[in-house]
Amino acid sequence: MAPYFGCIVGRVANRIKNGKFDLNGVEYSLPINNGPNSLHGGLKGFDKVVWDVVERKEGEYPSITFQYESKDGEEGYPGDVTVRAVYSLPEATTLRLDMEAIPANKATPISLAQHTYWNLAGHNSGSILDHSIQIWAKHVTPVNENTIPTGEIMPVQDTPFDFTTEHRIGERINNVPGGYDHNYVLDSGDEKNGLKHAAKLKDPSSSRTLDLWTDAPGMQFYTANYVNGITGKGGAVYGKHAGVCLETQGFPNAINQPNFPSVVVQPGAKYKHTMLFEFSA
Image (cartoon, rainbow, N blue to C red; front, side, top):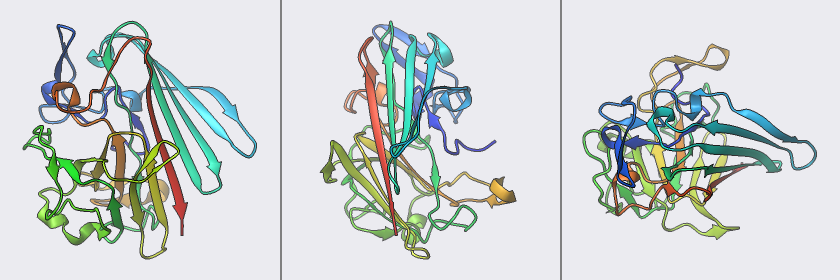
């Protein structure tokens, strides 16, 4: 089973502590699928359901729109939610993803993430440890032994988490137990058209570069630590660190952390989340 390759995950991306949360006086229990936690929406999250194609545009600004109707009680979450994802190509070397979700009848946590694994040297080129990355984040949310944020907002300065200037991914990864799988607080990027610069990923062998822009508050930087011998395209076998995920998101376990930006969306209100991927070489 591929570990969320290329998927949109939800209703809530990342981990919820003990698979439980309280909302408006009701305790909700979610499926436990990651140690003691609920991860990426549960056992049958948005990555494992069939979305409908509701619009497709050709021409110089092509796009495709997917829609999914999530039902009240699905994977333990409250209320019906209509979810849309629009993939578009605004320029020849730019991919844009616009995600939105509208709860119909109950307040609910919503935090979607796009879980693509990137390897700019090519999918069958081995490890991404020689890629370099810059992340426009001066803080991370450190985690406990179950990968749940402690609630602290920790400065990255003088730690192996500091990518405020460009570093090789593998340069200090051995100083991070298990590898990078941490939420970065996107607090220092330039803005362009309402989006913040989140990260710049570079492959030295091809000089290919990916610039990621978003309006989300956080980004999970994940170095495929748990990918282990998965057979992919053309029979390629993907091992540990075969790709890197740049999952812009609400903070993990935000529903249980009052000091994190809220991920609760009220009925009739609209959740919105945009990612812009710019490629160059």
